[in-house]
Image (cartoon, rainbow, N blue to C red; front, side, top):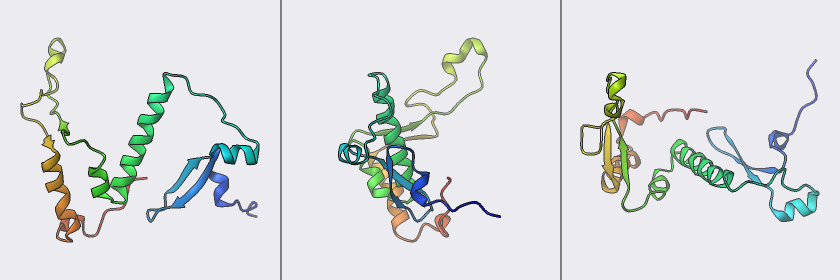
Amino acid sequence: MAGPSRATNDRAKPGHKRLSASSSGCEHYRRESSEDEARTGRGPSAALTPQEAPWLELMQFYIREAWLLDEPKLKEWLDLFTDDVLYFMPRRKNVPHREAHRELTPLGDLAILEEDGRYLEMRVAPLDTGMAWAEDPRRAPVT
């Protein structure tokens, strides 16, 4: 016999509210505001230390970036970058341990990606035209 059914909002962590479910089936939550805390009588579970605050901000940024790529909201993803962006993915080389400083290729050397904002825009533009056949059918997001 199956157990009692649970409402979808029960999956939210304490202090968070369900915002929406995306087309990919992911659910999005937000932290309850001070108004919600006053109404529910629940305050924040723990205050952040000065060392934790930047980490939390960075994690929220990465989660938003991944969501924009999964949805795909690529123009909004491009808006995350500043005008002087350099999207760089170095090549990893097999080198002896004593030469570990040479393991990753430096800027200007052969890299997997070394692109500025203009090149990122050129990569994204074909994906909105319907002519990017490698993305048809669009892949399912990784969850």
